[in-house]
Length: 331
Image (cartoon, rainbow, N blue to C red; front, side, top):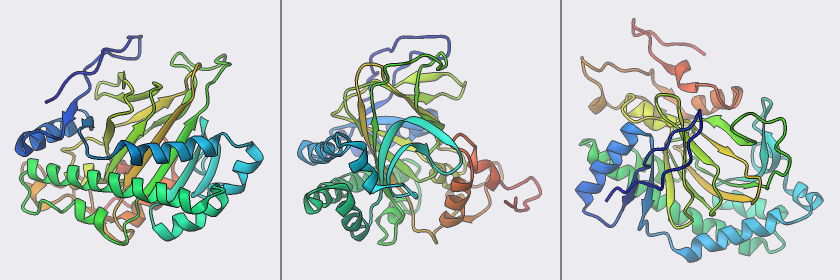
């Protein structure tokens, strides 16, 4: 069942629209069709009855709340983010800023175990909370990707999920904390920016937040849609890699997070990515004489390097488009 979210308040640059909410307990073929439609129309949807337990979600949220409540001097011991570890206001390496602080971790358990020593007074407890959450959302991510494969009638329904399940996958997890911003003077009409406009470079993103609003997605017409928060559901975003592999059929949605003037917002985001040496290119099922390949083949490592070299809001996929003569576009 797809149900519209409550209509948000409109302003000149935002639009009230029903966000697709998909119940994963429904008939499988119906779910697959609904997911494909949402990915084509929005590049975004919410899922309910997702199978990730409240206990697993609550443990990681609790660890995040505890960490961000520490004095700044204590938190700095887990940074600076380069890219992994603790970061504050700086987003990436090219001057992007936001009203947030965050923890960024690779999903490799060995890496998490090592990083947890500088993050928590109880590293084992922290590592277990992170690893259990990753296991839960990874399964959800793979299930959704396999439903997309079914909905697209691909010959290999696991072509996307196999990349995420690969032992060398490059997936990461991020916990963002947006403190309440008391002084909103000097910001634009949309208010203080927590995390600026961007798309996610990976295959699929799974986000869960507390009950504080702030997330917005951008429609094809350029208008922004506020996403009502609900701690019981997950938000799902199509990433650049999935758009490339589906030859533009799925939309890598651009989104942003606004800081709140009254309450702090906490979000936990899983970015499902392939191994660094995995090749990304439009699948044969997605290419035809009427729909030629839009992108040249590239490795995930190559794309990731390009993403790190650009500003947050830059359109990375444009650098990897195949031109009309079928020649490669060089970086």
